[in-house]
Image (cartoon, rainbow, N blue to C red):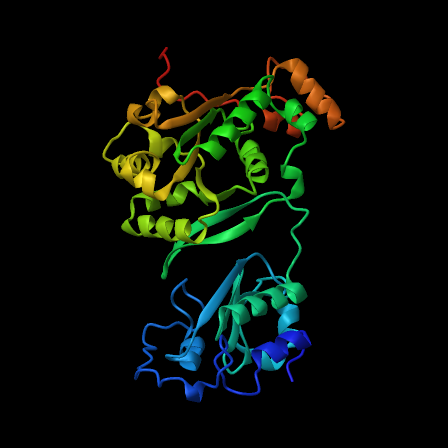
Length: 388
């Protein structure tokens, strides 16, 4: 007997007779399916991608009806495995060095002859003989072992490349990353709230485009993006590409990745965030030509009409150094300069946190949180001095 799952799902996924799940007619009364050779050579031990079920699933279903249901989130696989020890048929766990415990990277449960649930750090997929069974497996598993993120802020997908291609991992943000109206007005200069409302309206209303957030380090660009992700959690799906992986923009597999994401998440607008994207947006040269061209193609033109992708970049340099083709009207959705805070506003923000700031001409958001103004490092003089 399988423990940990509700009696309803056990009765549903462990039928007493082998019958067609949709019609209820015994399979022996249906036409014999065509001969089929199950090619396991391209299979994987776990769950490599959307259209490639793992080897145990392929072997169990062959040419018979196979349906899958996917859900993204986070689950307590440790408890699920403890409740259903006989149902764990594949597992990949990562030891935490110098720390107790392990992290479940991949796991496959088999709850019946043709009832599987595969999970990893960001999703679970149910496999069954009908779409209704597959969905019920996922829903029942989530009801028993899903971790609650109702009180969290927004989330984003961290894009990375591995041996299977381009994939992404779901990252959840804390609830306090979404600022209340009063807190938002304290964190940013006057008028930023008005611009934010207009920017949100553009992101909701426009299919694609390029937005640039400009400002010195520490002026709150990243904090604003966290707030934006929470504000648009219902309408948008955000992706993040680290500066070290910016070259992925020009790879051929990237278009296929976005096309698949667009197909799966057709009810959301897709937005990719490129943080510290100065090098990728600078005037085209031999070292960044491919990245600039990729952003041009993704943010405007026929490819943009197909992918419907919004690109949001943060930069530390001035837009005067940006390739002019990127900021032409029609492609540039929005441009905002994040300014340093004047003394009076910085003092109000510091007071709300119980801090007193030393006198300075202006402050970055990071300096206010640190409780001090900018420090000037004394640098040794390097060069040729006068000889005596």
